[in-house]
Amino acid sequence: MKIKKAIFPVGGMGTRFLPATKSMPKEMLPVVDKPLIQYAVEEAANAGIEQFIFVTSRGKSAIENHFDHSFELENNLLSKGKRDTLKTAQEMLKIPGSFAYVRQQEPAGLGHAVWCARHLIGNEPVAILLADDLINGSNTTKEMINNYTSGNMLAIMDVNKKDVSSYGIITPGNCLQNGVTEVNGLVEKPSIEKAPSNMAVVGRYIIEPEIFDVLEKQNKGAGNEIQLTDAIASRIGKSNCFGYKFSEERFDCGSKIGFIQANIKLSIERKEMGSKLKSWLHNELLEYNK
Ligand code: UTP
Image 1 (tube, rainbow, N blue to C red):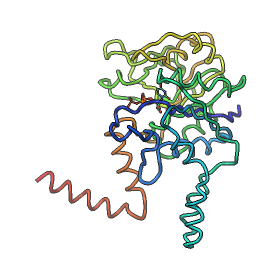
Image 2: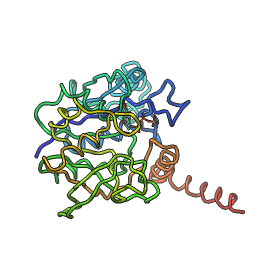
Image 3: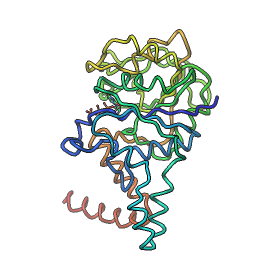
Image 4: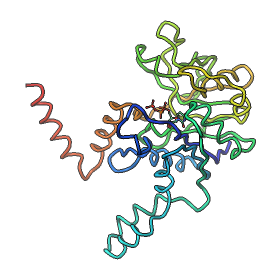
């Protein structure tokens, strides 16, 4: 099934990164030299997405500017003959009209943010990407779309039992082919005692359009927010729900440690600085462990 639209919820307040996120969107925090949101957009484009729908909020205009021309910058680079840098600034732009923005007027939760995009989605399944889950490799959304047949699909990974209360956790059913598992239940941020497994949902979803109707009437859940996972859980038994166990490495860039780890890993992978950074890290650790 072809999926052409993706929602990028970027309406959250990013409080775990204060004061950095006081006047700058969390999704604009850079990993090496690219903002988190650009990694997510590139992953979606790599999956064949043609319409990119952002759910923004007050103070997030830097995201809109990032995906637009900056004529002053481009003219400056051109006049200085910096063609490679100019290419970097231009090739990330998509064709005019492929980006749309709606406002979430209050940070009432991920489910609420997704619901705010309802008028831009027709009667068709849509992908959702959370930019603060950085997946290194850009293929996970594409693989999910390739394996999607119907209903709802969630990216899943195993987490330590002690961390289950930070995630949506699934009750796994039968394992099907290509990393796809039936989902028989789903609970948001359970206690260790109540968690049905250690298989956690991370920020990649494909949802059926019926989810918007569920979200319309949904009460607040964990954290006093309208949760997307609660809406998906309520559809289990009425439509298919699948987990997709992705193989690429994921960094939780909504947390400081995950964000730092992503920066280190992706910097090491850069040929212009990887070996320099590795030897610096090596020496630092030797010093530290003395
Ligand atoms: P998070 O809960 O990780 O983001 O939501 P947050 O609330 O901004 O972060 P903290 O906990 O205060 O540090 C995951 C994604 O969902 C979006 C966020 O922008 C983030 O990309 N989100 C969250 C919304 O769009 N709206 C919301 O009301 C909540």
